[in-house]
Every structure is written in structure tokens, then in C-alpha cells.
Length: 59
Image 1 (cartoon, helix red, strand yellow):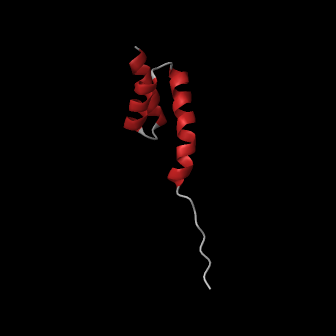
Image 2 (tube, rainbow, N blue to C red):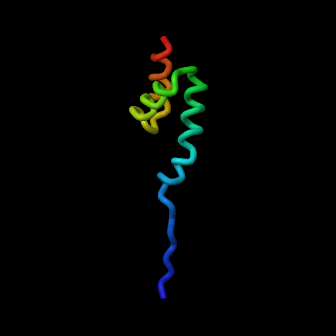
Image 3 (cartoon, one colour):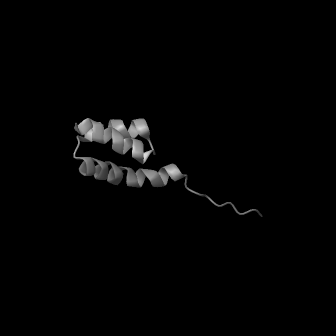
């Protein structure tokens, strides 16, 4: 008999930390939540690009 192991996709684990990462980003850059959502959706996992975009937004 074959044993089947169910592994949760990385996306399921990522959803748990999304709210924390968004809140941290908003607080870190002192920007509006909607601006942070737009920036993070645009740059995805590229933290440097996200930080630069938030910095440009504050000017």
C-alpha cells in the first residue's frame, strides 16, 4: 500500500504572514495602507524595489 503525504503549498503559509508584512511595511515607511498594498502588489517579493517606491512616495 502506498502512503500519501499532503504538503501545504507555500501560498497557504504565506497568507498567514501577509497581514503582518503589510502592517510592518505601512509602519516602517509611514505611508497609507492602500499605497502599501499597491506598492507590494506591484513589486511582489522585491523588497529593495518596494522600499525605494515607498521612499519616493513620501517625497
